[in-house]
Length: 114
Length: 115
Image (cartoon, rainbow over all chains, first blue to last red; front, side, top):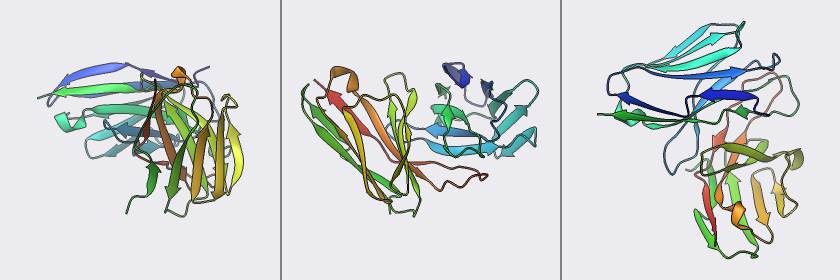
């Protein structure tokens, strides 16, 4: 059972456009929602993260929007650049759990055309 | 200095062979993981260790055996390799305290190809 559902599977955006990736979860115990970025041949790396006590977090061109009642969160990439082309994973975890496990979405392959 | 390093980068082997992948982290983290990434990029957790103690053991065939000689190292040994084991294997580490934000640091991966 997929704990975090991510869409779309792939996304093609023109340079300068907005890229939007959506995720949904069911477990109300989740209280930390990171996004990881993975370039070809590399391991995933933390990009940005949010806790459910805020509805939005922005870091440069990257923004997470969080809707606690809908149990959904999304990543917006403003002014998308070819260098943003990568695979993006949303994730969720219960920080109070002893397991310390991150549940990943299935990933979104983003391609930004110049 | 590479924070999480794993070797080898590429591993090509025949079905039925036994192989090992090594992982070391110099971040002083207590928790280490093995993830498997299939051809569709899906990241699946396999194991996690905290201070050399096995914490998470997902539904992984017994042919996969992790070994943590100390908290800076987590190796993965695979017996009787099968075609379906072909994937990219990632080692990761984190400082895991309950109630705190978790940040995973991943290695660059080991591309395993079973022929």
